Image (cartoon, rainbow, N blue to C red; front, top):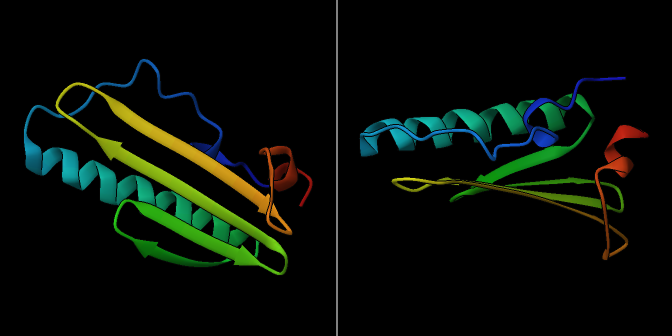
Length: 93
């Protein structure tokens, strides 16, 4: 079983960078980290804006990551045959 890293971590207590450039670098780093994990699971990934969209057969994963001046926003959506599921689908792969 592969470690799902950022996909399953809680970001409630994370802090953001004070500088906008640092926040954009963190966003890029986290999206690339998520894409790498999903590729290890056999997904085809594409980074569009603040989202990583990954597909594998009938499974679609959308990972969203954004930092504002004070908050970190992270969202993971998993769909199987266009029906919303949770992260357990990825853990079973």
